[in-house]
Image (spheres, rainbow, N blue to C red):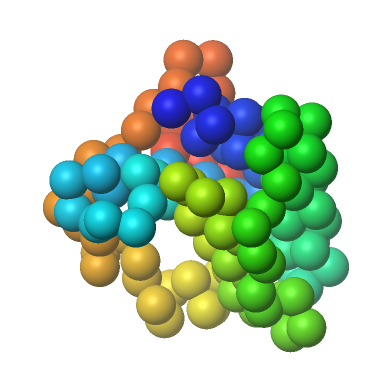
Length: 119
């Protein structure tokens, strides 16, 4: 889960809020993990997405696809085995992916803020 760690770190470095990583290996066949984060504005959402994409390139793992950049209300980055969702707060609350994927265990990393923490 090293990839998940540097994705979470990149999101925190750009001051993303409520960053949560979920281990979906037991409940989804298309990914090993989800990372869910919140931006405070459309520009902030795009900045978080850019930081994660840049981190991916630095680790030799560029995004396979990025969807939703036009509106920047919900941007999805396909990092292969990790799917990243960066939302505006109202959109995140509406879709409530944590509830939808509640069977997935949260992933915690020593030295990083607790999942869901706001900086």
